[in-house]
Length: 364
Image (cartoon, rainbow, N blue to C red; front, side, top):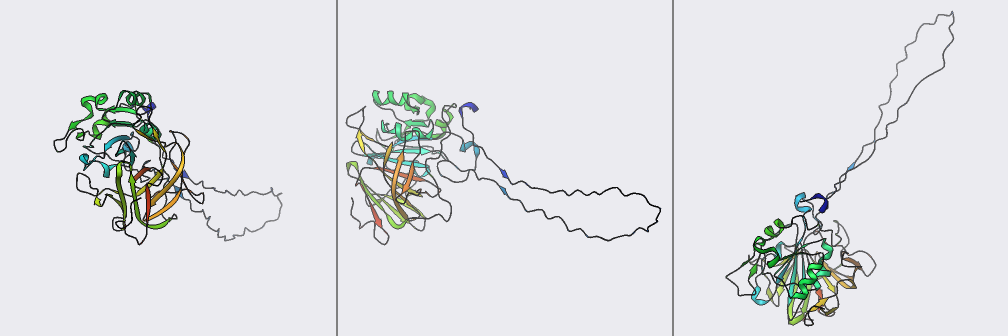
């Protein structure tokens, strides 16, 4: 890895200075006289000099995509992997969703698909891996040259990906080194898997350390109104629910009324769920493919610590992270941890009030 192609974390230590005052003594020279004066001894007690206590402020380095403390600096500076994971019924249960720092759920043709961002940890294997979309370019460019793990796409999408700042790690571009394989427990095209360890090994200094995508709260920060969760009806009648679990202190995910579990049988769970209400247009590469407009501004909801806050999102360009602002103009701060982002159309989501049942709340 060439240092010139990597960002390094600077761990600064701020030391308070200690001011020490030194007193100097002196007097005029005395003229000599013939008078003999007996020397006088005077006992003096000097008060001890009090030096103010100093404090050393050592900023705790944080992982950029979770806001949690850095444990391994080598991991902290590596590039992110953004993997396109299938959400077709034939692809479930998926592998790697509970290991991701950030997951984006996008509308695609009649279904949804996940853009799954790995940084603080990986998944071997990960999948099922599916094709990319033009909407992934604006969505993921702010991750600073992420390694884009996908199965490939049509000629127009592939050309746009190649011209973007995403590092192409498709099955053909990564070749045998990408760790791609077909599983026997699913049917094609829902059975292509890879390994994040292989993809990181192919980086060769091309990817960059991702900057933070959200702002995180500290302990004691204000929270929103209590909630039981939320429900969404995405494209293709894909029904998703999130329910606050006070025992886990996380939001847990459902497909329709069934728990959404990964290949290890663990229900998908997140510290934060963010709803980004955005417009969808048709892709220039495929008139049948919806394209989320993730540069601009729109309504946003933040769900964290069993509460929800309403506000707006904004991004000046595709290099910018998400800026979330509540209705009072204050930043909407996530809890340190893992985050799921729903890229929803207007009126695709509904909040479940505290004390209400998620199961009994009508779908939007």
